[in-house]
Length: 142
Image (cartoon, rainbow, N blue to C red):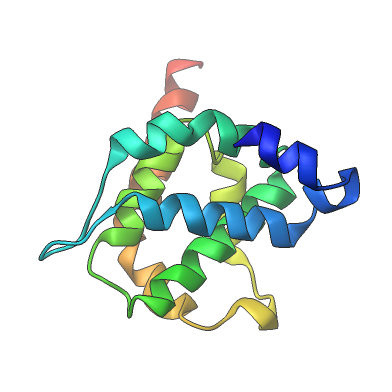
């Protein structure tokens, strides 16, 4: 996949937000198990983690990836727990770092508000867990 992208796009295109969003959408769509309820095939995310890590090279790209995932959830009509499952997998595979999740959570970008409220509610437990894990790390280090 990386070779195809590199062969067909110049450096500016490869680092564009549009590419990041398209890549994230394609990979996440391919990892959805369409059952009732929908699930995430974590093995597919794991298998493609290196590709995502290559193109999500900084927190701005990671934020764009999260916006793409939010848009995908809107398109799918906000399936219950699906965004949380993606967040768990992307965090576990070191594709998206804590800072990017927090930036997404607090983002007020007017262009990225569609579905944001529902998305935030669906990942409340994820952010609670993230903050608790952070607090534990801080108390372990003191």
